[in-house]
Image 1 (tube, rainbow, N blue to C red):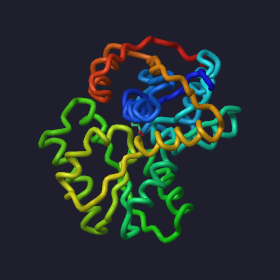
Image 2: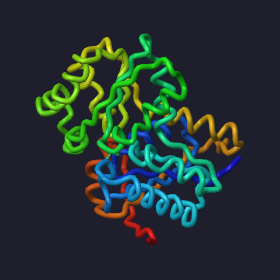
Image 3: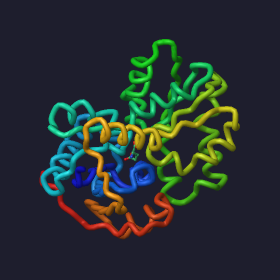
Image 4: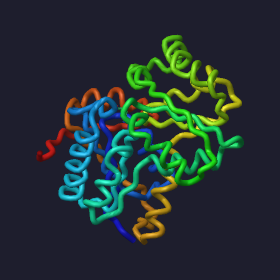
Length: 269
Ligand code: DGL
């Protein structure tokens, strides 16, 4: 049994969709979630900057909280920084890209997969690379949908603003290439899942990287003998680098209204 917590980080609130899935799948694990709200968004930043932020956060979580595993619960940080973190850290690290890609390949019937995410995630080509490495026959089309992040944070997921934005981003892509599976490659998109399905039709399978990642976390803990086998319910700590109040009020909706009171922390630069 290993009682050290799992360290999970994101640029801010979005990674709570990943945390929620991890807590559901692994209820006995303790977790420490760090939202880098002082430096959000990551989706528009350069690779070098996102790698630097990610290394700082991972070092902080290991140094201050002795975490046993790092989960990069941010698609942009996973796309840019997984390799650097894997080389730098002596504990296991998992991002959301590979688990999401595996699940998309399990779900697809026609090997025609669409990927949506932030500007950085799409520009990095990380999902396309991961899917192609797993199966050369898959055809991948991708597009960035930057407005969907603020729409989810403002609680506008079930409004005409959301429907228009989704239609605007996906209409052309789907007309040019009618994918059978759409990978939601951004932390915020699970919040918009129902509206995306309503706009693009129920025939397209939506794959959620958050859910897929929780399965990956389970597998790593099991394989490495790091699972907490206690019968007790795990404890969850929330840390932010800015605005704990905003994190609490907006983040609650991402966590089924759980109490996510966060501590303000400073990460040594
Ligand atoms: N968490 C980011 C992601 O999944 C979205 C928000 C941001 O741009 O920082 O890519």
